[in-house]
Amino acid sequence: MNLGPHSIISILHNAYYCRHYHQQDLNQTNQDDPHYVSLRARAKDEGDKMASCFEESTRAYTSGDKAGAKTLSNEGKGHKAMMEQLNAEASAWVYASESYGFSNR
Image (tube, rainbow, N blue to C red):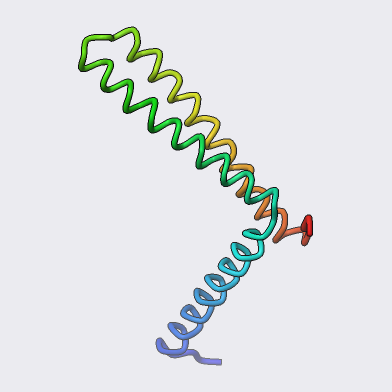
């Protein structure tokens, strides 16, 4: 079978859109899963805390409180690490639900 350039482009185009819509379906499916929603909400909360700590750290540093800035910066780094861990768990949850077909519903 001889495929011309337009056929190859068409095949790649279809593969991209199939994968794209499949991922949207997975995201929609997991949006209803309480465990997944909880992980993402907790990650967002940690991200908000991280941003707040880094903003406060910057204010403390510019006002001359270098020790306070360092403490707030370290606290922000802790929130960042927790946010990344929770997002990784949520991603693993999506992967597992896709690969192994499980769901808590």
